[in-house]
Length: 372
Image (cartoon, rainbow, N blue to C red):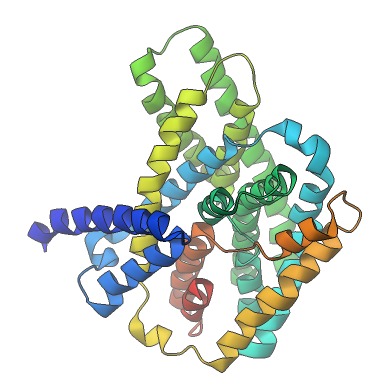
């Protein structure tokens, strides 16, 4: 096995970059070809076995990669955009998340016959969209800047919110009982907001302080930012599980909206790094889905997916943008733009493993449903 490690790592990189290049040439969403390449390399051909290749490092590496991607997404957020679309964005990441969570959980219970706790957990996982799929689609379709800003902000901000929500639901399930679960969730929300927001702002302030005094030479600035992102993610997670994703998003947004130092070169570096991380993440995660799990998908899974697309997303958009300044055509586009990204895939994989170890036999279904 040891001699095959360099070949497997090289194969992931080659497949990932080639899939994204082919998607660019064919004008297709890159996620489709990345998932197809991962399925072929893993469950179909049996060439790639991520769990054997990375062992216990797999999930931590996935989480760190997602943190870097969300930091890069945060660097694209401009607070001035909220002057025109702030109402729609706030609605989508508050009321929209609640409506999506409720209706998705109800659909999972009705169509898939999942146990109520698992249905609620799946609904919480599926509230995210994510920059890994939203930003490439926006580059392709090039909508009006106003509606593009709404979709971009929602995709970047709701990723850490959705991850924290899923963690709190998971902890409530493990705690057992309605009262204990509600107490865990309420305390977790407060800790996540303080830990993620506080650490993210502090990390951004430290980097601005350091760069203004020229303590870091130009050639070390990109590595220094990468170090700071990893440190912020780890510190926030030590205070509250999964609040690290919020910390890196806040850190990126804070750096993007300050005027004391320039971070344009950092954004360009992180955008190139994101391409490589997407190659690793989607190829690796898709390769972990067993063929037998895919065979469990039937008409009920198709009905669940159709409900998400045709009912849940339009309803969440309608309610959350009711009093916004978006036109009906812009709201219609927002209602058709809710692809799930790497956070949904990664979080479902992590919780499926933990719940399976806790005795929940249906937990592995969460992964294949998230990928569907």
